[in-house]
Image 1 (spheres, rainbow, N blue to C red):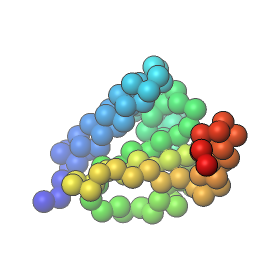
Image 2 (cartoon, rainbow, N blue to C red):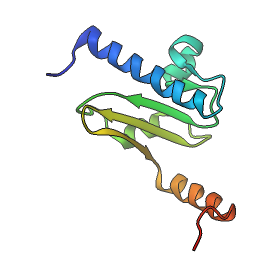
Image 3 (spheres, helix red, strand yellow):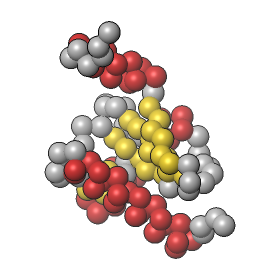
Amino acid sequence: MASTGKSARQKGHSYELAVAKEHTALGFVDVFSSRSESKRMDDKGVDLVNLPYYIQCKAVERMTQSYHDILSSMPDDRLRAVFHKRNRKGTIVVIQKEDWYNILEFLAKKNYFKK
């Protein structure tokens, strides 16, 4: 059954907080929801602030907006990602192809990939 209204909003807010806590566990200690910290960033589609990249979190079964549109609505001065969680399907992260290649190039320079 689809979430509507207040329950859908609460599901989204809870997911944002969960992703923020995951980033805190990775060492990004000042991660906050833009709802509480920066209305300007929230208005630009950025859900989490104080990270070196932008994230929008989606906890919905069906996207009403395309990933392309979500990414293009965010500021483009750093890497942008959409975290999309679906029930019983897990979470995927969507980024621009050029950003993916930049990540791969960085990891290759750090000898992350062993042949």
